[in-house]
Image: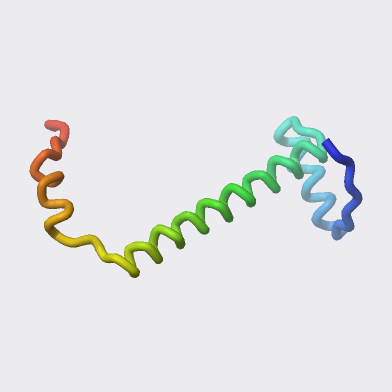
Length: 77
């Protein structure tokens, strides 16, 4: 890992330290996990947007899914 230096608002830093303590993580690990979660969420949203754009460009036709709908098996209750 590479060490970095960042500026933090004192109120945010205090909240981070409290949350890190509650979760049993040190400050650095807490921030790394938070950043990783945000990056994953951003990636998921971008993939969803790409998927949406694809269906706008080429909408799904009814006949494309009709055969699959017949094969669906829902669990009995």
